[in-house]
Length: 383
Image (cartoon, rainbow, N blue to C red):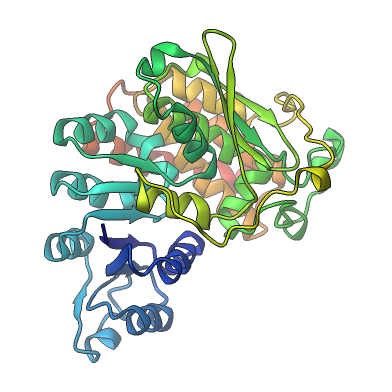
């Protein structure tokens, strides 16, 4: 079956990887819509290569540059939803960072589209709402994050579902500062934090990987994706990034998914699921690997995991507050306006200051996000 696919966030790292997959399996994947933030030239190039006639640009000051192409162009607050309504895709790949991806995700679910979710923030902020909507419409939420895609594969065929699971074990590379003494963390420079040891990613997620907030967000995401308590979601450091995640079942058996580090694999898996296709992924050479290492994360030195665990356990608006504060602090660090440990401090103080509401209704989550950003910016100024 050839799936009609819309990519939200087509010019980012996940979006461009998805287009690489589209080049490799043109008989299984037709791109019918693309959406980007500000990169007009990149979006135009993608549309020309794949013959896409429906484009959305978040930057409404530049969308007129696209109108000259004769294609259907969307922008403004409802642009993404209009794009989805007009294209009626089988699958929507959501690769938009932050809260901006939430409304179009819910709109796509309402239209009956399957969702390939790469934007973990959607499930962090409103996982209960998104998963309930998906169950009500009978559509599939397919994880693109390598860790959750791995768990998804490990759980396939297990009719007992989460009742058979003792633990979900997310693996983390540990980032570039895995062995750095805690007293040296305050000296970390932006250039150091952007040197991820195993993955090539965008700047925001690379910094999140260094602080371990990426893994913290993934813990909350896993809680909702697989309908499992936070107490059953754990993290282990695995520097080689070959084992992408593991599932321990109640009988003591552990299943793991292994592959080389290439985001094209989980994207292709989400597109062709429930089938598998041959691809260009480099096979694992086990003798060359020599060994696979695992160690406990330094949770006291890297507080992101504990903060995320607290947010996930308390639920309501707290995960949205954590996510928003982290986005503000992450950006401040990238602008050299905040120290590396300051990221954790800003998030923790914001979580303590913003009112916790036990609801994930869309309007409540949006307001919590806005309030958290305001508070986090004020804290950033004095940290």
